[in-house]
Length: 315
Ligand code: UDP
Ligand code: MG
Image (cartoon, rainbow, N blue to C red; front, side, top):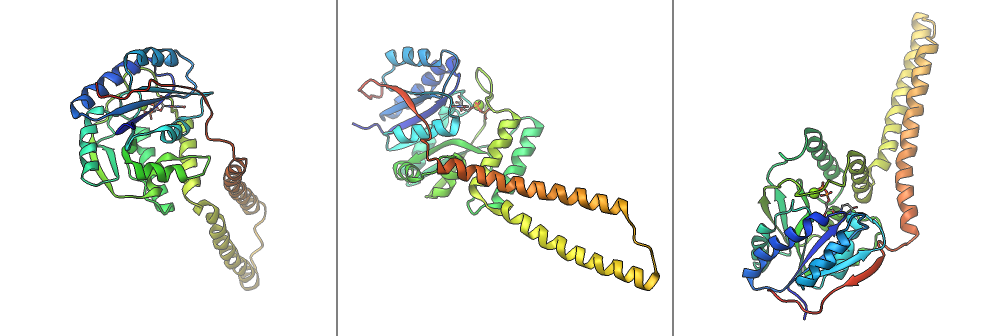
């Protein structure tokens, strides 16, 4: 029999968090009398996450371990979880306890009231550094200006999604998966609840600034083609301005007899427009690279092994 709820936990080097995460989930879910499974996706951990998971599974039958063949990244690990989830609803949740299980009953409550998606939105970003808070804010402002889907600010992947949403997500064929965007793209009736995001329990964040920058590029290029158009509009503007400037030079020479100003203005113009052209080429390159990787049609992830015990209960 299928469980009511699937918890989807992407894990990359999270050995120290498994037991506590299970305990917190268990404490919250067992009084609710629902059946649940905890899908742990081992995303190429280099520590003993897999051993710890298998050990934990001996005592806790809700744990299902999906071991990927290498590190495919959080988005791919989440996609694996979505593919394997058997629940009537699923909740992606970080392994580091930054997504507090204690708000799950509220999510389930709203789901029972008819919402297909229940977003968990963090109240503050006090835990983040000044730079991360600001760059995150700019990112959401820019992407929401540029793309047709609205990606809610200050939400991560922590949310409840019902079976119809899971099925919709499984239909999206893209290989490059910016999950937050895909979650938003599928739509459905959505509710929001707020929570306070705590610090990571143990271990380290896997997202440094360079990774976050690439994550942001992934998001923008996956959900908007505006950067491709910017070059054309900028080109039109520059052509118009240079036409006006040409008139000014002719008038200057004919009316006032001013000599043509040479080298400095020329070199500035050349350097500026070479830069602009390289940027435009780079933008095209970003999209081209993504078309290339989509066209190869490789699977999003590969599974090495799945371990599960065949009984789901709420004990
Ligand atoms: N994660 C993953 N694969 C990766 C990187 C991260 O499965 O390549 C998992 C990680 O184990 C954690 C979640 O994604 O459960 C969020 O990662 P992290 O806490 O490092 O991100 P942050 O909270 O700092 O944004
Ligand atoms: Mg974290």
